[in-house]
Image (tube, rainbow, N blue to C red):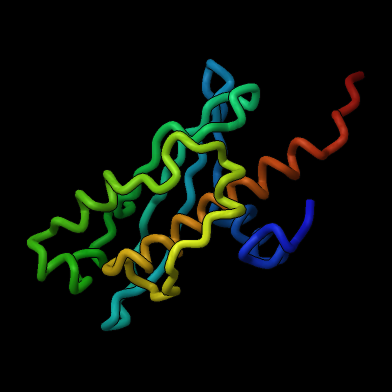
Length: 155
């Protein structure tokens, strides 16, 4: 797995994989990845969002079948984002329905180069794209490492 293929360093991807990403296998062999993003508003109020990516089984190229993001239950920081109070909370609908690379194989996230902003909030499209790039590339990194791992020995 080439580090050059990712927009983030292998070290960063490992930290995100180990501390922010959880994976669950579905009955059909698909994967659900959940990524916990901790950021802040422009007023430096902490916020936590949960990004969810549903993937088709490996035989289908781990095609992205659904994406969504929402505030973590109990989070109130999202209500302090300028896009939340200026847009009457419509940013929550945007987070729920914005699905970059929907229908594409997960590997497409390695070549995806949207306009990015590493801001801690998700008010601008470039900030949201930055978070989705981190989520999808961390998910790809985790699954690629898992696929490359030697099979466990059975006793």
